[in-house]
Length: 583
Image (cartoon, rainbow, N blue to C red):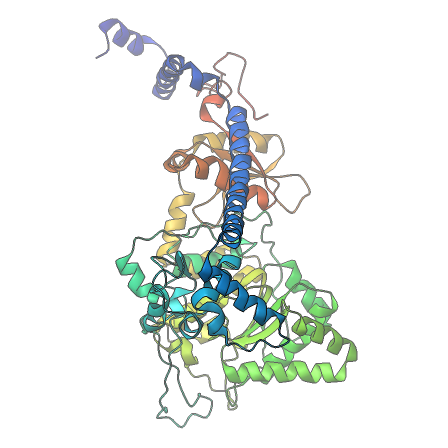
């Protein structure tokens, strides 16, 4: 309780209440810092140096761990080779004999079972195989390996995983429940006379996977950082629509620039369209006269083939083409082949792109693209008005249960550029009660807005998704220090944005030099969100390191370092020399 004298002082001093509160808080902060001189002396620069050193030591530790593991395996092999072991000697003799033959006479299983198997596993301790290959090839030994890791576990049936699980005492299951389930499909004939509908519809979205079982029975860890997309816009829709905004993405240095919509109805060299693709992360190409006939859209197929030729002529990066159906995949492949037959130069480039081990160009459908990624992804929606101009609300597997998972797989494959080629406008999709159809409509809205650089329309396309609310709340965190720094830099003529980002990971203050189209510096403050990250490595090393890897220059700003520079509510600096400006 305040003393009577202090109470009288507060009542008589001609000072606004806001100023009194600021003065009281300032005094309390100074008292607290005086009690802990180590904190008072440590500056943001000191913490940054410690974080840099820690990051370097962690990288060195990872290298040492890898080297130690390799050395241990080599030592184990040498020990077995030099120590008298009849079983190991038999295995070595068998392998040396087989390797000396022009064509080994033993089956693969003989190499991996018994005495030869011990030698082979010493030589090759890490094996990459499918679950079915494990069951067919490897001996059924309970401790054949130390650990087994299942990747893309959402696509592994439980019965296929059991034989592999038996062969190791420890299992790590990696997967995403928003990806496709095991591909166990059956079909039924549709009771319809519509010629533009597929004869068979694929089922199996409810098939139980190893991931489903593991999620219930095993402890889990969410992998939050999204690593693929080099621009947030590429994953922003999937994050907020399918992952409830839980993915953390790196704020993009490149801002979306308002641009006119891409008009495919006006004749223009495809080279110009290719340049538009490479100039923006998402480009929306509306084929005005495209028709969906016989389960194909030949106009879209021809447009994509011409676009691929233009991109390859500019030595574009890796390209993936995804169709919403197998017939449309075949139509695109045919269109590309026709162009290649007419143009020897394109044929040479195409053969090189498709023939390389890295497969720089592929054409697939939505059922078999999971796990792939490419620099440029081209999506052919294909669905549209039929031969009579009638638009029906059937989008094949997208309309089926779990159709939004198929869309998530397609829309999250691009590393640098997503190209959406469609013959329908979003407003033409009216069966919004269907989860898959609604997601398709919303994504077309999002892609068209991103292509035009209309960030407000992008937010409209995401409105109503729980992830959009989650991300919006992260953007509204109070941060007076960031506000002050941004205002100071703005007064100096710098271009700044507060809270830049499309996920919960933000640049508190993003700075762009005059005349530049890209941001250069990310200023991170010690706001509430900063201290909610309990792991100091994540707080000071992981996120700043990811920003730096994406081209950002990162600076840390601590509130205590700015107390002496921030002006009081009456406009005077605490030291009496006027308002504090950013350095």
